[in-house]
Picture 1 (cartoon, rainbow, N blue to C red):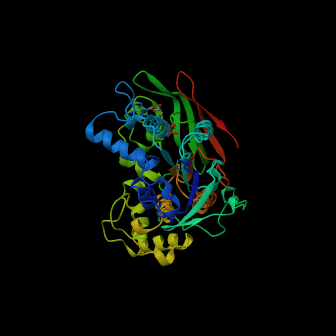
Picture 2: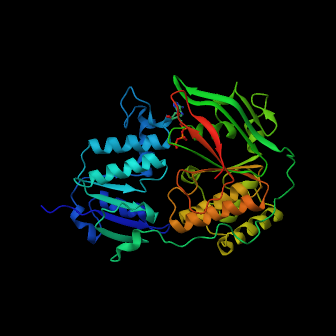
Picture 3: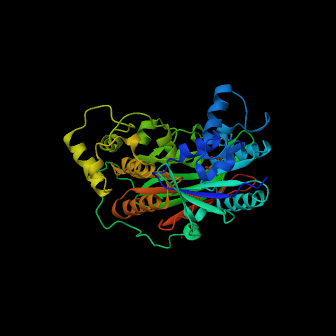
Length: 416
Ligand SMILES: Nc1ncnc2c1ncn2[C@@H]1O[C@H](COP(=O)(O)OP(=O)(O)OP(=O)(O)O)[C@@H](O)[C@H]1O
C-alpha cells in the first residue's frame, strides 16, 4: 500500500474549513484527498477541544485526562491542547488533521510541538490546515488553498513562506470620539500589590506587583499555564481568588463593596471565545451599539446618537456598507474587528484583548493589530493585549511578563 501524503491546506476567513474537515472525517473527501477515504482520521483543533469540554461537562467525567488528573475545564488553553494531542495519539489514527496547531501556545511549547509533529510525520500522515502561512511545517509535500468550499492546488511551493509585506502599524484615519467624557479621572487604574494565588496546593501567582495607568499600552505575556487568564479574571471581576488580596481597581479597593458592574463599566473586553459563545441575529451596527449598553447584541431601541456613533466606527473599519449584515453571517475576520470595535466604542478606561488574533488569517490579523495600535495612539484608553504569537506590527509600550517558578509565577516589566 502506498503511503498517504502530507498536506498543507491554507485557509482564509472565507474558507469553508468545517465542511472540508467534516468531508475528510466522514470518509467523503474532495478528489485530491480520495486516498484518505476509508481511513481513520483524528482531529487536533480548537473545535475538538471545545467538543471534549462539552462532553466532559455533560457526562461529568474526565475524558482527555485520567480520573486522578486535572479536569479539562480548569486547564489553561495550552494545557488543554497538550491533553488532546496525547489522547488522539493513543488512539493510533491512520492520519491526523492539525488545525492552527500553534495558536494559544507559548514559543517553547510551539517549538516542541513542531519537533514532535515533524518526528510523527515519519510514521503518520499529517494534514495541516492553516490560517497563518508562517505556521507551515516544511514536510508537507502537497499544498492547496481552500477558496470558499473549493480546493485549489498550489504548485508554487513558496506559498508557505511569509508574505514579506510590512503592514502599516497604524491607521492614518481618526478613530471615532468617545460617546461622553469619562467621569473616571483617576491616573492609576489597576494596582496589584504582592498578589499571590493558588488553586488547591498548586501555586499560580507569586507576589505580583503591577500598576496600570491611564493610556498605557501593555502586552501581557508568559508561558502556557503561567497565570495570564487568572490575572485578567481578577481585573475583570469574576475571580473570587481576588478577595483578600491587595488589589485596587479604578479607585476601588477589592472587596470594599464594589460590584462586578462597577468594574465592567470601566472595562472593555474581547476574547475570541466570546464570538464562539454568541448566538443570535443582530446587525453589525447593533453589535457595536451594544458595546454602549454592556450587552452582547442589542435588545432595546438605540438612540439616533448611538446609531450615528456605530456608523462612524463601521466607516472607520471600512464596513459602512455592511451595517445591516447579520453578524453571524460575516467572516471570522469581520466578526473579530466588529467585536473589538464593540469593546472600544465607549473608550473605556481599560481595554482587555485576550489573544484576539488566534485563528485569523494573516490579512485579518494585520488589520486587527493595526486597529489596536491606532486605539492606543489616539485615545486615552489603557490597553492590555495578551498574545503568545509575535505579532509583526504590534507596538506595545511595555510588556508585563510572567515567569513560572515552583512557588508560582513572578512578574516583571520589560520595555520592548
Ligand atoms: N479553577 C482552577 N482549578 C485548578 N487549577 C486551575 C484553575 N484555573 C486555572 N488553573 C491552573 O492555573 C494555572 C494558570 O492558568 P491560566 O489559565 O491562568 O494560565 P494562562 O497563562 O492563561 O495559560 P494559557 O497561555 O495556556 O492560556 C494553570 O496551570 C491551570 O491549570
